[in-house]
Length: 581
Image (cartoon, rainbow, N blue to C red; front, side):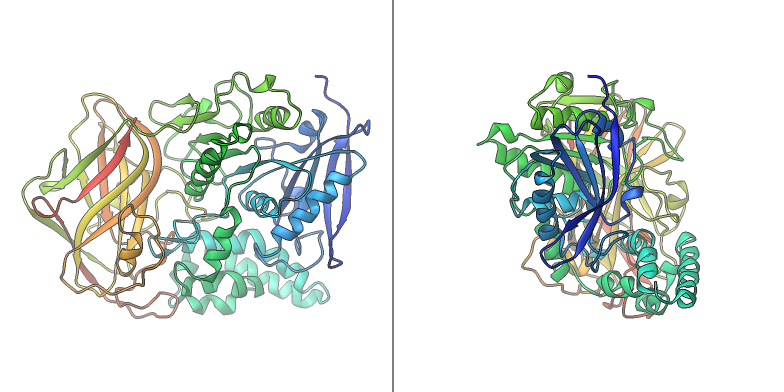
């Protein structure tokens, strides 16, 4: 189809029932012929939302859509006050119905966007607004608050949460708050820049207690972000967070995620929820794309490894970029034209290591489960060996630095796969490694660690990481997770949050069984490569430090050094378990 000329209308107003005005930029075919609407809502500024590698509003509009990019309440051009998540259901539903009535709309609305944009889709859909017919949530927030979005294994997602609030929200909030006082506004912005330097070099995260950061933060950070470091899994805001996608929607959905995205479990959980829902309504069958991507990097290229040009969101086996795939999918579900999807499998997954995309009718289960057991001398074998243990000292004032992973720490720590040599050279990091594989092994799906450990402290943390080791000894982190000992009962079984348990201290010196979810991955180990498991007690600033005292880093600066012992072998079969494709 020949691209149609496009008009761009700026500051288009949407009135809300309470009198608040939301503003949007609208991209639409110049001929005025009614078209389906594709709506996204963002707190990050609608003029910054254009990303041709994800969805380019101009080119999609030229394909016969009205594309609307709206500032959320209280952000940039929109009126009102920004209160994260609270107003997105009502504001989103009102906007959907408004968009369906526009003179250049044909009454059918789809929603798109990633991260918070994705959360706004789920919240709007929960109100079942008239006209809403499809969702395309990418790297989706709005689920798994206690499994990595806000907390992980009982630990607070310190780096991601603080830098999200600081880098993505706080600056514009300051500009709005002090808009009537240029002198004070300049002073507040200078404070923001000073804090930005401290976040960029990670020194701000070293503050103890963390609440002492409060005087350096603006109103938004003090009110909405920092207090979470002093709260706990299952707290009030976690329930608000998870409510976004608590129930399936009766419409087709397109889910896009990355193996190294902080919201990867949310994307996969939402896909599975929609897949099960579609058993009774095949017209609502979901689609899924998972690449070797982080929350913001869709290239598949990282400082320590490249997964090849084909891994990039702009290539993908020549199927087109994500903008084109969005268009083809919306053509199918909103216009009844499936031609653009005929070569695209319903599920498209990138398997790292072999560096290939694989297509499936639906997300497959692993062919089998395989366990590797920790053993003496740092060994990792197929069966438990003789009983033994390895020990180390964990000092909260000298935490293991974060090296890659599914993070969202702006500036200080790049997300994604990263070399682990510096981490593994430390005395407080244990490693257990297999013999070289004599055939390819593809680890696929859920990865978890079940192990037995004792500590001299009343509370502490254990971090577990899955690594690939090449024949030259280079160790690359692939997946990881954490457990806070006092929250062990809430994460027992599969390592995922289970409500109904209260935190409790551990008895110093007593071994306990712990389970850590390392989330999901898809990686092929080549012959000659080895699989490695790291165990340590910190990953900072990704997660807040356990002070080993039973007190939170938010409240206290008192620390003690803990003696940690990991037990293995007969009677204590500590192991890593993963799906095998």
